[in-house]
Length: 202
Length: 134
Image (cartoon, rainbow over all chains, first blue to last red):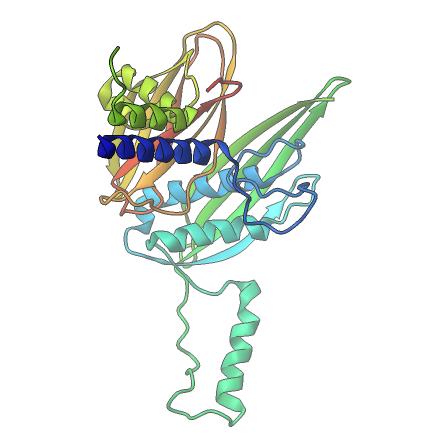
């Protein structure tokens, strides 16, 4: 009979195609010849050196954010503003970057609203002045002055480190502390710490 | 001699194409279904064992705590993170960071995570034991 033979041949061809698909590597949608540059997982644990790194920043931001969201302070979607984070370590650390990650995560949660921080105030004032004093804008569409929201809380932080080393081992201990102050009353309404220990052989 | 049916052959081919990670998930299911359905091991899990999971809602956020034990005498580094899911199975947030955790020999540690937003209603704990084989 011809039909079963045809089906068997077709099936064998399909199997060969499937096997071929499993074994032959496909070319990647990349540009570049040498293959020395690779994109990695931005959330992977970075252990290149024991200086402050991306994983430390992410761990701190996650811990602070989740802890703040768990507390009852955020129950009524309060207005919060960012203040300075003091860097008391011996390294240069972009502390604004840590606060930006915390702010992003808090805003994504929908549980907190932010007002402009002191650093971000001048561009806001400039834009209000442009709309109200340049004479270029319709009065009906210009943003009014005097309507900014005042923050009820202020986030302030500090990062410190203790470094110890001998001939064979270097130990770095980071401690990040974040406090939420009630602006009007001056009280601390929430506080959290993250401790990170990194040890490397020299 | 028995003829190899097309279905059997296709099954064999699909098994050949499966990744090592997919096999590892099946191994983890032996730990106890309630716990295992929330775990995703990359490679072998021994000698680390997840004993139990606690799940609560605090301030409308899902909070998860897992107890992990090192059943061997040597120290091990465990990398873990929680993938948060909404009720339709979609990922919530951009994904947590892999967290390193040193577990000393015969030690028990706690893994604790809080969801980034209230829409998270389910979770999977991804675990990777340093140096584990597929």
